Image (cartoon, rainbow, N blue to C red):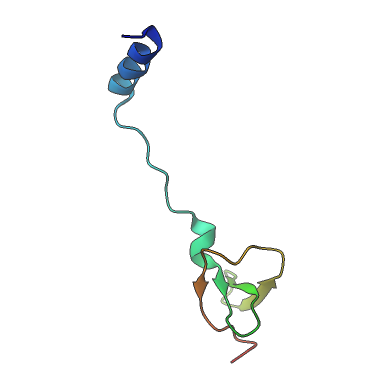
Length: 72
């Protein structure tokens, strides 16, 4: 075997299982509006207020589709 491969196998056994990539939290909060085609999210503050923020520069692919408050 290769010395480099042996070192990788030994380090995996010492460190345990490889870490999995967690789900990205930002994608779970961002939505795409099918009417206005903007990416949007609701920002909630600790005092109970919330506001709608829309983004035009964020890519739309991979986001959940939901109609925003502006288009309802």
